[in-house]
Amino acid sequence: MKNVNIGIIGVNGRGRLWRFWHNPAQGVTVSAGADKDLAELEKFKERCNKDAFTTLDYKEMIKRPDLDGIVVATPDFLHAQMVIDSLEAGKFVYCEKPLATTVEDADRMISCSNAHPGKLMVGFNMRYMPFVKLMKEIVDSGEIGEIKAVWVRHFVGMGSIYYYHDWHADKRNTGSLLLQKGSHDIDVIHFVTGHNTVKAAAFGGLDFFGGKNANTLECTQCDKKDSCIDSQVPVLDMDGKPARRFCAFRKEVDVPDNYTCLFELDNGIRVSYNECHFTPDYHRNYTFIGTKGRLENSEIDGTVKVWYRKNGRNDQPDRVIDLKIIEQKETEVGHGGADPLICAEFVRMIRGEITAPVPPEAGRNAVIAGLAAQYSLEHGGIVVPVNPS
Ligand SMILES: NC(=O)c1ccc[n+]([C@@H]2O[C@H](COP(=O)([O-])OP(=O)(O)OC[C@H]3O[C@@H](n4cnc5c(N)ncnc54)[C@H](O)[C@@H]3O)[C@@H](O)[C@H]2O)c1
Image (cartoon, rainbow, N blue to C red; front, side):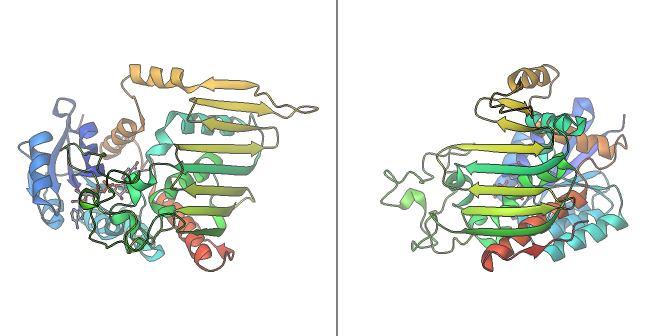
């Protein structure tokens, strides 16, 4: 089995996926890291691999001949150039979602990927979550007939913690939270149905976060830090420091926190998608409605339920699948969750055992659908055509 060497760009945050790759005994070594932050590189060496090559300049890292694969785990707007440079350096590339923050960047990445086929995959780890895999299996089996409608509600209850205290809250960095957060869901809709978005319309806005506070105001310095339920003070990172720093009610915040979107897919499936960043609870609820029945997940009680159409009303599900049993089985075989599974797929792709498991076109299709919806909400909810790959 080929030994694989991986380098990571952006070693903190999502870059800590290194823990699912670095396993020299299994022939996988995370042997390099690049980051703009020297302190993060030091911690990366200490925690992951003391012999790792580290650099402040990712271009120094990607030209190293010992590296087979590059992981791009930096803020969204940086993905495009880092991915293109890494592909041009001849590497396999794992790009975190969203693929890009503009249509132009996504198209540049697809062109580059076409010039270096089979080398780029996108980090849509939700495809590996047990409930998503199960929903896809049920839809593919034809059990609920031909899918005609999809309804998705995303309760982003930790919205303040994850998105409004740092770079995520500035549209220049993310394009829209419909990419940063929603691209996962849009991809699941495309993946499970096997069809892509061709039209989008949306209403939405910044209804809760943002405000008049100074951009430099940090939660730790704020006189409301003990009473504000959106304060970052109690949320600590691995080093015991507030994970993200700035006030969620500062002036520069400009990404909507409340989205109601409609999508039409290429075979006429109608989709409604809701994403709200100030709900108390945090979970996703998907419903797929077909000509023979419907399917719905509940992350709260860990189930997928199936109802069949019958002669008369049928309120009680005909099948209730307990995901805890499936998740336990996966744990027993060493695959507790989606992240280790998708990381293993990148290694298999590098070893030539599989083709790109989440192809770049899927990343582009989610980005362009999310951007079309963002454009619509900024232009009175008009219908925006989308041209999938
Ligand atoms: N698939 C998932 O479930 C998932 C989960 C979280 C984040 N992500 C994605 O991972 C990416 C990173 O998000 P995050 O939350 O980890 O962000 P983060 O801010 O916590 O970490 C980003 C890292 O990149 C580094 N960095 C920033 N600018 C850089 C530059 N110019 N050159 C080199 N390094 C640079 C930072 O120092 C930091 O180490 C995003 O694209 C995000 O969408 C995906």
